[in-house]
Length: 103
Image (cartoon, rainbow, N blue to C red; front, side, top):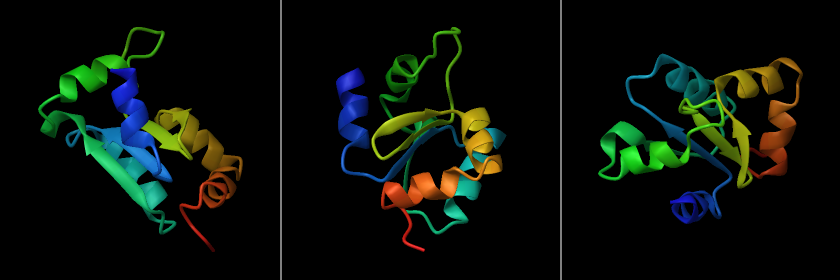
């Protein structure tokens, strides 16, 4: 399943694995989208293999890391990590480096 995640994140500047009913997923999609980033979103609760993908995304703490955010094909983390990057002023440079935004 990890190879599927690798394939789904390849050649895309930002990928968010999300659930359509998750408020934190919505917040992170809105935050990253507010910079005009080119974001690919996979709603796990709307995909036929979404449960399998979610299982592959489970973190070491035994809970799903949704939203799971990949920037420049690298796993950044969930909502806490993305918000932390934003507060530290590191999110926009990371998005620029991944060519998700240009300004």
